[in-house]
Image 1 (cartoon, rainbow over the protein chains, first blue to last red):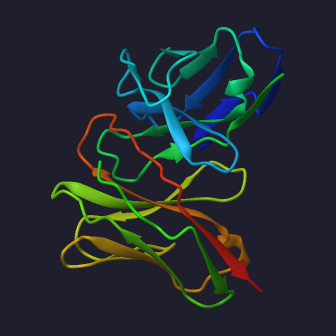
Image 2: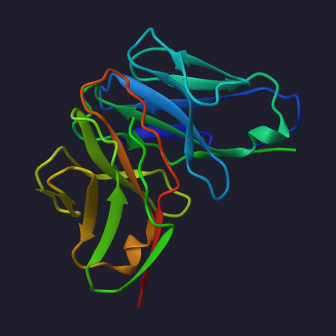
Length: 113
Length: 112
């Protein structure tokens, strides 16, 4: 199994450009999450989706939108990128009961210049 | 979710046991203790979790005090590949889409 797959792995954007980060999981998990991690800091939750058809804001949602396309896929969109959004973005998934913890993807390294 | 306190950094000699402490004095009765680690530049990796009994799996052991106000993650024979940031998190298990909140964690460095 691939687990959680994120694309792209690296991206450089100019200020004001838009892009969508893609995430897909093949574990039939109900819940999916988007986190960002700035250098030297812990992960902060941007948005999450408890189940297909639902999304909720996390700790730092401003400047982002999400779409839970189906049970497998959860995308994160930056409508107008800003340098403050330079970060590493991690997608994760889990079962509702979370008996085995979250499974994280390998991350997308985004630089906004 | 209850707040946790961990040392900022720790060192361990290769082949020795690494004991990582975590204080969670405000833990509620329905909250579990979870441990994750993040090896440089990679996504966090689940290690182990427990409620009140000690737990062991192929990666580590988790010792939770009787009053549940603190716990210790034990890597029995640390290797260089165990060098990582280790996060202790407390949260309820049975919550739909509940959020995993990461603190600063402990940077464990395993030395040759």
